Amino acid sequence: MGIFRREPRDIRLPDDAAVDLKASRAPWSLWADGFGRLAVRALQILLVVAVAAGIIFVIQQLTLVTIPLVLALILASAFAPVMNWMRSHGMPSLAATILTLLAIVIILGLLSWLIVWAVRDQWNDLYSQAEEGFQSLLAWLNTLPFEVLSPDQIDEWVATLTDFVTSAQFGSGAIAGVSAVASFVTGLVLMVVILFFFLKDGPQMWQFLLRPFRGSAEKRARRIGDKTVSVLGSYVRGTATVALVDAIGILIGLLILQVPLAIPLAVLVFLLAFIPIVGATLAGILAALVALVANGWLNALLVVGVVVAVNQLEGNFLQPFVMGKSMKLHAFVILVALTVGTALGGIVGAVLAVPITAAVWGVVQVWDGPNTPARWARPKHQQMA
Image (cartoon, rainbow, N blue to C red; front, top):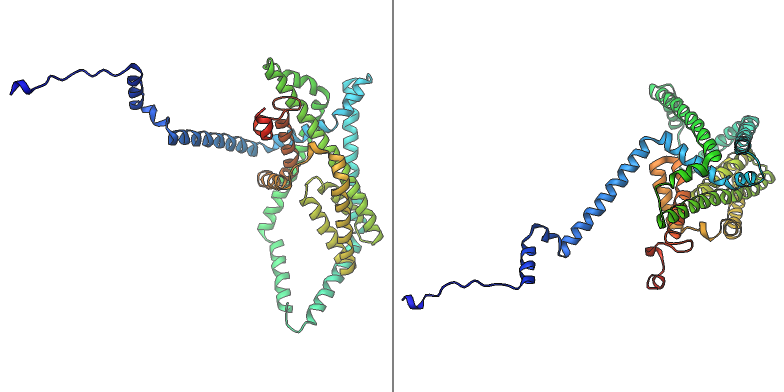
């Protein structure tokens, strides 16, 4: 039987095959196939999302600093051409900064004074007209063949409102309101201080931030900085121009229709214009409500017509000319940015969302060169070139 027994032979594999066999048995080989690459990509996405969530969390916790900082940067970008012009004509940087800050304070103070003066001057008339309109509405409801609101329901609502105003919950809300006002004043003062240093020493600060970069990285950083300042400044100046034209047009219409509080409403139109799409709608609703309360249905419909006409003229003729193609964002992108900004920062977030989005898109457009977008943002025929 021994003659049929074969001795085991030592089978030797080629060197490459042996290496592949060892690699296939290694633990990290599980990440080399298609499913493994998918898992790696998923982990990378989760890491990016976690880092972004952490950054957003920190920003939300430090809104008292981050919001004034961003507002100051946007205002400094808007007034950068004025500062450069004054510096180029030999004016000291400190004097140019003080003049620019005084101009900003005067503009904001004038807007606030217009609102307070007009509301105080016409509030009594508007209140009496609102009361008469409410009584007329109740009388009209009583003429309907079916009962909409009974006197008992109205009395119950008035009692509920009175109880809420005199309750501890309303008092705690008032205390929270005082705290919000204190935070607003603190943020405003901080914004003015930061804006002062941005206007005065902005170029020196930017040069300091560029020190770690060399070569092509430095050129890219300079393009990003210049484009960001240009986009933010152009956005603010263009939006302010469009908002001013809207406010003047609607003010003329409200004065012709003899709508109360025409000046405060025009100022609100100007301010709300910095919230694209949504701001114009809110301004039109407020103006129509005031006209409805004070002057009736026909006047309110005429006010709606004036608002729609002014917005159409602005959107189709003025805005494309003033804002230019570099500021043009798709309406879907604007709505998403507004939603995210409002969810993260409320009204201030809604105001800042669109200019920040426009600045990010501007950075993408100069990522690989002065007129060369990032590769993924180019058309396909340019990517193949």
